[in-house]
Image (cartoon, rainbow over all chains, first blue to last red; front, side, top):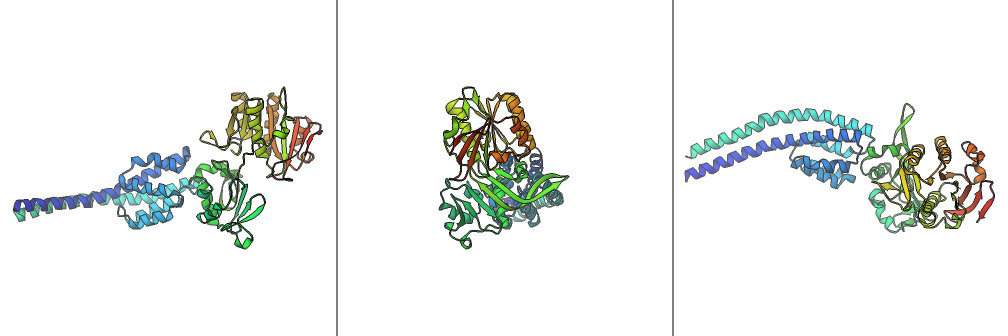
Length: 163
Length: 304
């Protein structure tokens, strides 16, 4: 009986550690996806000048799930996206509020300028984002890995105590 | 289409209108919205408004949003059109734009902070040219023709119908339409939004000179149709067409043919009798009233 309880506790601890670690990974994936999108937009706006709808729809499937969902929401309400994105900013739990602010501000202004101004705003967003990416990468490397280890070690400790 | 572009609060009032009768919507920041609906009217909450006070007014932000939506949320993709002061929608609606023109090294970069918009709705008036068509061609082909009318008198509609008739019904000529503002054919993704005939090729978005030279080289047209001769390069292009033995039908803004004499660019063309026919249109009895058809000696062949 003790063995089963210990095994369940071990599983729960590992799962908790995994969840915490994956939240850091999701955060990193989201900011990286956003940066990829900025690069892709920059190239397309500079050369092909296709409509945003076409660009984003083509590229959408290459992103991770969280960013895909965010883009789908944007595309659904593209013409009047401010309220929807503000709502998303409040509700989301993927990235921290500062990053969400950068993403939302960029997306609200997207497509409203001529190509030169649009490229400039993409470059500005990329500059701001670089700091965020650095921070999130460090977080993921240290806290993400640590939480996984803690989960396993905590689980094993409990397993031993229960036995 | 219109509802997707205008502010949501305008939707209800648009439901009260017959869009086939609507030829123009004028939106000015902070001013009442004016319609050309077979006459000049204000747009109110329940369709046409009796007075200025009841009219819907649009804000500057809403004007910018109209352009944003008209550009399919991608203003940068329409910057070349914006620089020329208009955007053409997929159904041929042309939005004329006023705003702050941004220039750099004497070159227009873009227009921003829009202050007023003029939405012009194209109408296909089938066979509106039939009454005078017989004066515009003979057994040898189409005469070089100039359509003369003040703005908003139906030149574009008339010339569109001429393209259809030259192409389809009477002489099955290869017609090339050089559609600089994409207003004649409203071509989107290679497909014409407005019918211009079975034997008609359309070059859209290019300036007239480029369109004509490339069109003659590649499409071997019998007739070339152009809208709105304005710049000196347009007149050079006409000389080139005529020199190539291709017939041309063009339009220009002018009150009547005698007024053309005052336009410097026309001197050469008139002196050399390039145009063999002149069709004068007006608004006297509604848009597209055909006032007269003249030959190259200014002899009246048809009078209303």
